Image 1 (cartoon, rainbow, N blue to C red):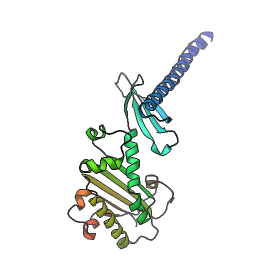
Image 2: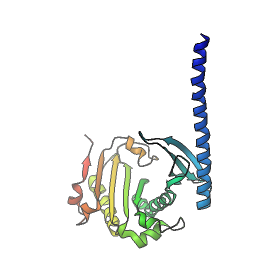
Image 3: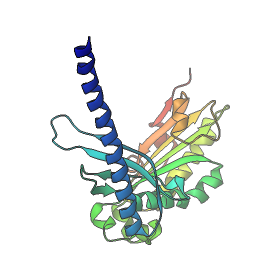
Image 4: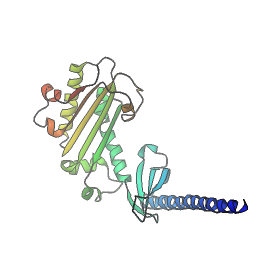
Length: 238
């Protein structure tokens, strides 16, 4: 019996040491990452989550952290770090520019009474590296819009859906997007019969959609008409 106890205690001790080491290691990686980011950008940063993972067959793993500047949780971005805690990539600038892109669409969204929307962006790496955090999305847009992309997501709760009325709104929004002269854009406009009106556009997707338009710039570049848009209209409602 005594021998059995010894056999069990040793693995349990190693098990505890392993998790203690991992906890200490993650703390060190987190501390170094925050220090490096603060030194680079002059801001204080908070870490919402950090995790370690290793792909099957790889000798070394990576850390993935969700980080945001202190006092601005809405500007969360991702940081990827190597096994030894060196930053491989981070998206602080891109997250700031995406936030500014969302803000740039606000006057148009307010006009339609839309409160739940998101804008994802793509800026080529060779352009992004030439700009600093102090440069705004508007700065980049004015100089490089012909190589930039925007992906627009809209969610609305409409208990009494009026297709003719909504088609007119989609047409106006699409014409505005065309006037922005971007290399590419897409619009995903989804309607729901119920849901939380304060929910974000992606959170609302947990609810069953009733109607939807989904298309890209290429599909409407020859003209924004009711007939043209009707090709991209999907009705989920019975």
